[in-house]
Image (tube, rainbow over all chains, first blue to last red):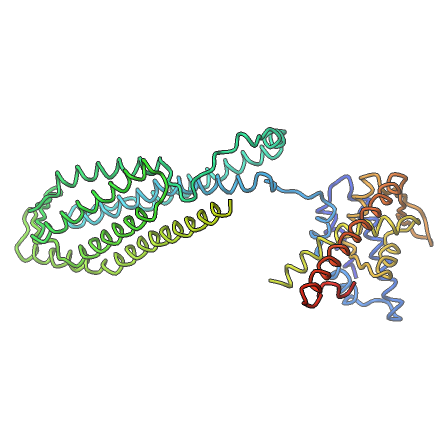
Length: 335
Length: 127
């Protein structure tokens, strides 16, 4: 029966080298005393199962050895919240190029297939680059925080803080100006581009492929134009008054819902009137139009889901704004 | 959720108390096995995986001294409270009694308030 020596050997493996002999000698003596006492209780020498029960109750060798180690962590509780925040930011910035790449790939694939060029975007390469970039970034961030954890910077960083340097109070429902600047810039660019290029009757050209849109496109053209104008106007207002008011939150929800409805209708409106390309027969072209409209129709439920999601976010923002306004009023009343 | 929370809080509460119990028990010299049994007999169950690392930590902090010595024809490591440990234990016991009195006062205040409000006191159970 060699369970006890094996147990001690396993515990020894996980112990700090300089303390191994001392700890094992004491542990060995403690187990021996326990075995002797148990044998006296039972009135006979212990069977292997009895020894096994004693050792099991003491815990696995690694657990027992860990008890003797000082508490260790790669990144301690002081830096951990900051570490998680940086990881989230890094993940977001790793995802953006990957998502943009994938979207571009999907669009290129759809257009490539329709135009007959048969180009397949490198989805695997995009995903591979994302994983490699993401993991490398996580590793670097973890390394930096692990080093910070072990330098005097930690105590200095938190010892030097001053209440006077704390950021000013934010309005209860503030809008970052940077977001408004981006929204206004994108909105204006989109407006100019849309007004100049998408007015009907519309004929689109992708290489050798010609696509004519149905007359109903005119409605969508003006609808999108008006929604973009309204959305940009809200963003301009947000830029100068960077907090959500109830009126602007309601307006944003209304614009989002209208835009969503228009977006959904586009997939049911059979927008493509005709397709032609080099050497295409009339039946091939008609078949391509039917296929395209069929597929856009199939996207319709997904468009509804996206619209519901957008609307949900808008309603949530509105509810939050109203709730915070109530809380602010209550606070003001209390003061 | 509640049993888990209770267990976590109980462990937190015990952690500090165990150190005081061990220091108090080691006013007289003992080796690990007898110390654990002595604590258990007084209602302070402590497993080996907690006791021995705690003894080492207290020794490294200078609160205990230890020596290997032969006893009943076996080598055993005997622990005892050091002079520094004696001082620290005295201060810890003062703190312990102060905390105990504070908790009693808080509970008494709460019960008095409930009695004044006409409801039934509930916190003193078990004390």
